[in-house]
Amino acid sequence: MRNQQSFLRTIILVSTFGGLLFGYDTGVINGALPYMSEALGLNSLTEGLVASSLLFGAAFGAVFGGRLSDYSGRRKTILFLAVLFFISTLGCTLSPNVEVMIFCRFMLGLAVGGASVTVPTFLAEMSPAESRGRMVTQNELMIVSGQLLAYVFNAILGNTMGDNSHIWRYMLVISALPATLLFFGMLRVPESPRWLVSKGKNAEALKVLQKIREEKRAKSELIEIQVASTQEEGMKKATFKDLNVPWVRRIVFLGIGIAIVQQVTGVNSIMYYGTEILKGAGFETEAALIGNVANGVISVLATIFGIGLLGKVGRRPMLITGLAGTTAALLLMGIFSNVLEGSPALPYVVLALTVTFLAFQQGAISPVTWLMLSEIFPLRLRGLGMGVTVFCLWSVNFLIGLVFPVLLEKVGLSTTFFIFVVLGIGAITFVKKFLPETKGLTLEQLEQQFRNHDGQDAQESLDQVEAQAK
View (tube, rainbow, N blue to C red):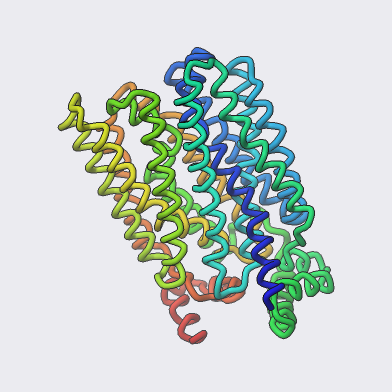
């Protein structure tokens, strides 16, 4: 049993290097942008394009990665993404002008988007039901760890080599190392047993399960997966036409809603433009880079705390609490940015509130988002469903990343945060009205209750299944 648990931990560690790359490549622009702006002559619009071109690529990478992982397998897809991470990182590092940078950031976004879909799906399919929440959210921990690493390297390089015109290139190239580790690590990782069953490779699926489960459980879980797969055989390969099926349409609607809820908090305006926000509040560039490390530290600590909560608290109450906290922090940022404008205290107040915001975001909202997206879609729909919903997530992310620096320039810090407050209130309303609880159910139980929904309130149906499970 110890060997099986050890091997499962190895699988989680290796595959979540995709999350680390996700985090580093989205976070590094935070510190690289001020130096890149000088070297490449960027304005507020081209700054937004450089930052958000990755997100635009990620939207397409999410769809591409989802379908590719359904066709060729989760493991092979992650291997391909590792190569794409490496090549596009080198392209960004060596970019001679803004046009090449935008193109290479778009290509890097394809890898980030593919990883954002494939890695959580792979983890969900490898994890036992009782610890699925903790294991899937290891990816979220790696994402914020990657962002923290980016902020730390940005601060070190910015404060030791700030006069070097190529400093931003050094910041970008660092992510080539974890891309290499991901590729060689995945060569030793097996394929998802659920995907193998979907391709009729039951014997291979059992061998994988025997490596990560006790013998008796491996056999019973294989039967459970086979039953779920057999029930889905009557359904054609998932396409957009399947949205005509009520229970499929409901799942996709919920997935899109979850994705948008995470983004409209404005979290990535802080993750991508945190240095610019702190500079706008009154910090010098070097001090802003150091202050931004606090955002990375609290993100990691809050994610660890959130992972611990997932096994004890339902998804809905965590999400509602997180949204209430982020909305309140944004409201205070908007108020103080107006009241304390020009005051030497303002940058420290803004830093304290961004840290508070990220504590709620990374401790509650983000872990629940990626966990629920990985668990609500049944096997045959998982690639398409994750692809479509995460496409929406990255599309909203792209729009926010593009317009945020323009909003800062046109309407100012205070009004920009008030806009996100309104969006946060809308997100809380959606969660309260539409989102069901999914805690404590296997992937197969979740699929069955959605299939049996047909006119029955989703929350009531979930409660019934959970009661039966007890």
